Length: 276
Image (cartoon, rainbow, N blue to C red):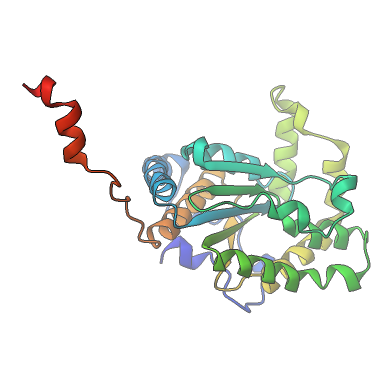
């Protein structure tokens, strides 16, 4: 079974993350075993993104969410780096600014969605507004509980305009998260990433899991599915994300556009002398 099928959250499925093994790695036993396949995938993603950019009939929005240290930054670096920056934009959504708080919660999101021919990557996204406010009780339940339907309508609007939406939830275990925090503490090149908040937020692990489960359950329609990516193994995370992106882009049946000028006329005008 393809990973794009096995890891996809079906519409109306009741997601229980404790039933999904974050250490799952499919048919691949190790990084070395999967390295050649990932290299092949990155080359193929480059080809497909070039087609998307040239044809300009589709857009791709890739959403990355995950518990702290799950690897949203790493996925951008190791997978999406294969795409040409000329047609790709990565946006990271942090705490809203005062100006953003003065508008509806999707106001800051919409202007970063991709135009036809573009790939947009959201490193965290509009889904933050059904996660942090819920877990930390920043707004009443009557407010955040209505946002699921608003998000579904927003994403439906995007798909009607030609945007294909892929949403990846990177799933790691509490032990793996703690180990990654320790690695950051011990590695001078990564110490800038660590903070007290990383550890204090671990106390809300169960609350975050419930919030993520609700997000995955309520917001995975056919037109904008979620994929739960087992991410204890970074190499498998990268492989899975790349394969799902490839399957999706290949499914668009894109074609290189035909020339809009008379090529033979250009050859006769500019190349006759050199050919003679």
